[in-house]
Image (tube, rainbow, N blue to C red; front, top):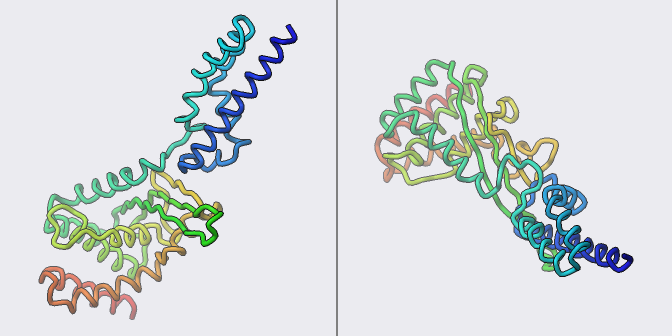
Length: 281
């Protein structure tokens, strides 16, 4: 009986080691959600998830020997490699397509081509009663000079909504310009090459440095300030509202003075610039 207890303890040690190995693998692959990035948080959830198989492995070891227990243990260990601890609403690998799907739907609802979308955008901003939606996703790394240390990985996903009526006149002018440029570049049948910056301008202005609200898909992030991850991200990337308005003004001036740009784009930039002047007055 004493030898059985020793084998049972050995089996438990092997199971614990396998759990730790699975944790290291997922951490290396950057797959762990924020609440499970340390082993003391990972292993209770992992063991709970495979408690039945672990119990069966223990019984198999007691009744049939260590070899039987190890064989059954594989049925508990294997799922840990692909295990996502707890309830994870967002999977980082699915965030980018989710953001793209949300923004593609926004453009599709505005119209199938840039001319119809332009009319829809104009109508939205004339009414001032619409709710604008934007979904943002970015993932990047800060390279660490010390080769012994791993690079710092970041990502953020957030879904924002805002009432046009709650925005200042200058913000509405800037957002209307961003909507037109996003439609022209990132919508089907547009006149410009795809440009992700227009979508980021939209997200910044809709969020409004905290004046907007989170949409139904919420926020998910890694590596950013837990107290206000969206503000941290926007500050790091130069996407605060004042910075975006300044970028939009410069961009509109450049596009308007560039004879290579389509006539419709230059006319739209001129119109926006005239309104920028009046909004800043």
